[in-house]
Image (cartoon, rainbow, N blue to C red; front, top):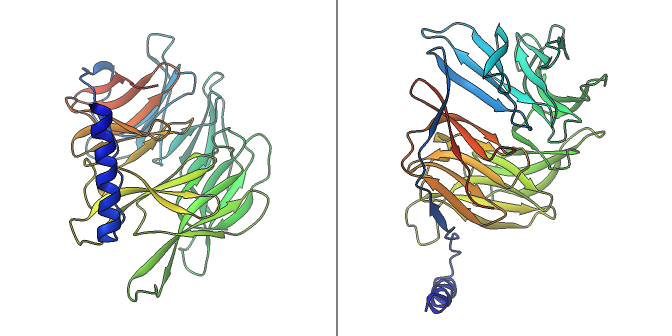
Length: 350
């Protein structure tokens, strides 16, 4: 009976496509998880603006801004030592990330990109000079660090670029002009981003497209046009990059957020959707897992994540969760912010 219903639903969607000529957004299955969050770590009472778990699940790094403003405090915890902070420092920056599967932490401080060895506690600057370097983004395998460089004096005259380097003694080199929503491919050799042009064939407004840059070559290469304005870009598998954008079907019903998948050949498909994402996906923050395939966010119906490989959404409707989020893939946890500190909840799915 269930199989018959599934067939009928599939036929109904096919008939709707044929009869109305519109492309239906996929109805991604949702599994609601009744799970209670577990209190994990107290914070100092400020706002946690960034949080990252090391690949082995033993180190937690977070940035916390004090009440009333001021410099953020970078705190690194060794979770094998009764959650003790092994490193604390006030910094001027809001971005941090672990370098691949190591215990090396990359972060921005005062316009420079810094590297902290969380074992020896040795800290060094990867970049220094009059330029402002910010938004460090390591490749998934830890081979490269990507960041945005802005010449002092403003962002005029094409002075903002994306740079890349090997963190262990490599030379910093320009990759391409500054672009929005940059994301590494799973292999760590290419970067995808969003470009913007004007004069779309339909007339009026801006048109958006995906572009790719390859380490070792300078400049962006056009990949594919976008349907709508991308608000988050993600590269979960070698075969397909995904972005989330508002979309209105041809029958002029309500706008909704849809995940669009783009293949390496530039072919685009509607890959997933969630009723927890409203028509303006810029309201949400997305947190992809290091290994790809999963991305978590706080939607209108609570904490949930899209498992791209399984083609399913897992939702935790009873949790009072807030951003930022962090993945512990080794231990099977998702970390989130809540009243008084950091909480965690077990992941579900294969």
